[in-house]
Length: 362
Image (cartoon, rainbow, N blue to C red; front, side, top):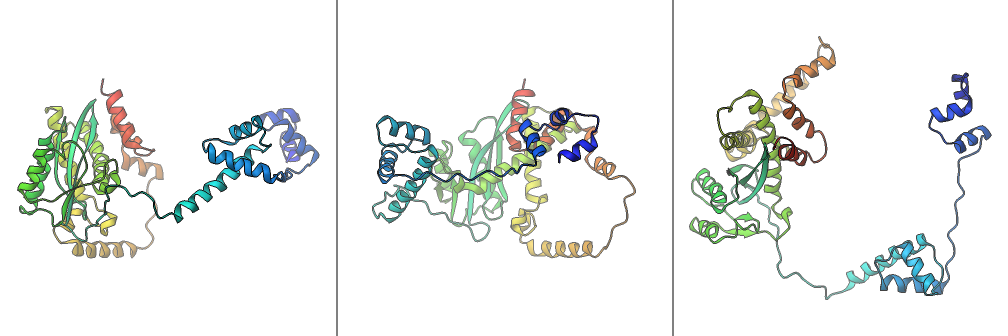
């Protein structure tokens, strides 16, 4: 290695080569001496049985001790000398012993409320409702959604600045209207939010013979269908909002009216336009209207036609020109550009909400 560097940079000294390559002086010395970089494996120190037993007692008495604190405790009380890594290694073994003992016990406590997770077998069996939050231009809006769990079809929605009992009632009425007045075959899944456990909401469900079922508190995974639906809604909502704002589609309307129009378009896109791989590549609306088989056959035929086209012709433009022509980033506003860019990183919805709340909300 050092010979190769010297032959390439003959006008530089070894020290300058070392500095430019960001290598340490010890590394340079090893190269010059052709020394191996292998390190000798240190054998673990043998432990006395007395020390090992004392270590186990300390660990079980103070399970929060780490290697450093455990070693100090044993030295202070004259219980023996043990290395910090050895202490942590024994702590892992004791954890395994405790897990084995727990698995053998028959008197483990049972939670007071059990919950059986039931999955729908077809559309119309289980509905789910919840609300989420979107932030636009510094204003927070509450979005109430009601979906069919099987097809992810949005049966009802409502958007307002506050999450009230009347807000969460609107999607229920819309869902009943979309389902010819019939309630779900099994039940309506809902969380423990104040609006959903209120007396008025329960009366609304009872009046339409809807069986309500609460998920356990602080376990949103049991209502994962609508949680994921709300996240997907916000993914679409923010992009639609920026596009309509750039095009000036609703510039004469108030923020509340524009938010309602954007939410309506987002629901349309999610139900009618965006296919779901989990549904076999068709949209939720196809499932709701019983045309999923026909659409899947059409998609399959189209795919076969595309595969049979053979080798495509060569590009008439450079690759980057083709990509720029599709993206058209130069016509985007700065806010839309940053919104789009956020979706290429981690936790995009948090970043977009922060931009709308702290940067463009002033």
